[in-house]
Length: 68
Image (cartoon, rainbow, N blue to C red; front, side, top):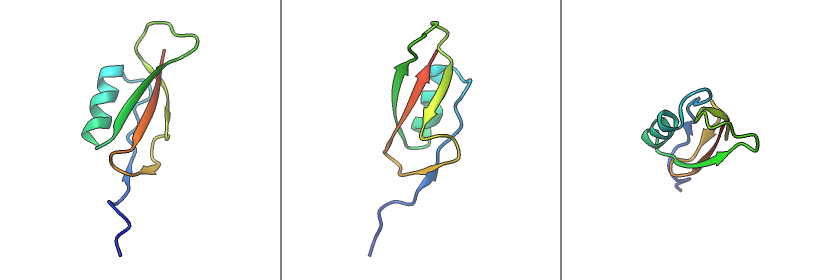
């Protein structure tokens, strides 16, 4: 019985640039959704991520990053 692919750690991308965060997450096997923070400052720095760093998630699942 297979439970699907093993879970992998979600990398910590907080305080990284949007481009760096997307590359790290896609290299780790995740899809990325970018959301602008309600108080977006145009800095393109990741303020939050879901699931959070260190959590385990299925490869191919989506990590939402919120950028300032």
